Length: 306
Image (cartoon, rainbow, N blue to C red; front, side):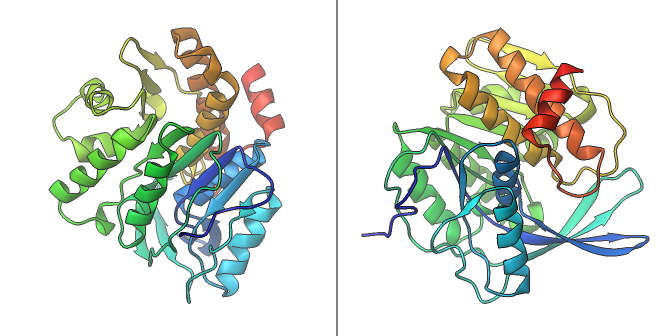
């Protein structure tokens, strides 16, 4: 039998996926930040006041300790078995003049087998964790366990340099979607997975594969929220961009918060618009400051009031 993730207090959200150190190269020098898309989502949820745990694979080295302290500062529970590697992974980001980032990875993703002792309200995964073996199979096993017991959210956050062929990556993505209730993609993800498709066509494909809600973010052009009955566009929030690191993850954290607080109201257009605006405000707050620095709940509330 696989060991349980957590035996004590039940968590509202369990995030499964990689945690690593972002090494950001700028003209002024290099800076290190705790990162990794799922870890960023967990940290963002903690900052928003959501009771959150992270199952990951980091080392007991200095970088691993930095990640653990970073998560703890937001109240995120590092779940048992997460400190299982000899060396903590890194992602080196080189910033362009417009603030966008290109990444080079040094990562091992091997997740110990685990089981869910209870169903959290939301189980989230994505990015490298969903594609890179051997850990990706452990992630899929957890999602299978969660079926019918909680909401599953998935953000592929495609990293082409870490994937096999395009066909293999699409197959893995399409294996994950039927296990997910909500799938969020960036427009870059959508174009890479389905070149030639419009954003709406890709959202329709995701829904056809079994998701209840497909969300596609398009930066300054806003985001698309799509269900089998509704397609609506939510405008972005204008802001000055410092860099885009963590913006999509902040959007995902706030999207999950919206689903937790408003999801019982169904997927009516008015509900989707409010959830989408909440996520857009969170992303806008993040991009105006350096690194993956998501808003607190108070900052998000103030942002929504403006």
